[in-house]
Image (tube, rainbow, N blue to C red; front, top):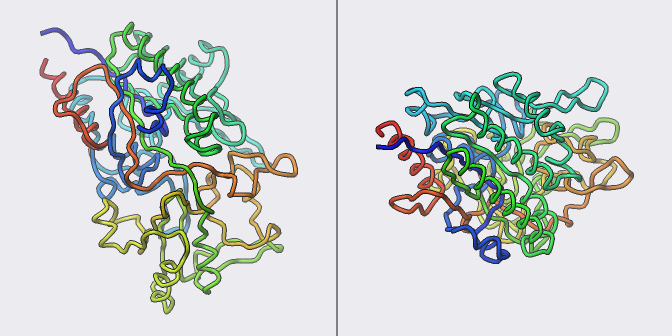
Length: 434
């Protein structure tokens, strides 16, 4: 029996089924099929579910941001692999001596793999940052920078300047790794982020979205060619689909504050959340928000306030969350699901002068909620937009299908992201028996 090919797996952010179905002629060069994303349809949740072939209630990555009760602190986009519980789908594969690599996947630092590359800037004490990437082996990033001719620019990865140039650099890096005899792993996982940006900025049916898809298809065609030349099969899949925003953003924290349930701490006229004394607050994450309560006298009012909030489709208690694949750890006492075409914004303040200092900047780790306004410039120069009405695309709800394509067959054909992951796990196990 011949030696099975190596495998390249690429998560393409926001590669939705409807998007590729409307796509240009280039989309027809791929045999795209549809799959149901995991719920909630968010980046970190999807990637954790894929690598473990498990539900969020099992691996614990229930969103892009988590509330750590012991610290009374919300933390978004933390990168430790220890945040994802459970065995990886490559566990037996790697224990048998095969090599695994991850490039630009979330929660990959400290992962049980042989090769890692992930953005990891150094934030300077007096402001600004040193752009850098974490890599294993330690010289990998320097080697790729020399090969590509420039370092990875984080300004193209997120923020007002985020663009297809981020994915272009990653494609070059993936191609080099596959072609390098001393680096090429037997399983290589990559991530292309750019498609998500313009779909959120302008909506999935915009001309900007069509151009972003065109770039994505070019990159996938390049990776398909590079994979074939390097002896790799490929799997390209979307983690979620983006739907058009059709109504105003929903502000659960404003509603909780107005009801006297969310506490704030005034500092020089700005209002910061007080997670130590408040009755409740919501961690907004696209179309899902986890609501944490203190269990005090206001407990009974929280659900009532949120059910009456325009734009909320469901207020899910712990039982309903479990049915949806969430819990029992790291979820709020309640989880909110936005109505179709609506999304949750994190602000609790009412006037610009009350906004915390971090609200006007790209500051993904300090904000206790996801802020897509970071994709737009604001005023004065050097600040981001403070107008959430500019957002035209969102995601997180169940239902909207993602797209996938592969160079090898699945039997049976997957209908969900978890099916896709289990199919890859089966393929890796079969490679060990070849």
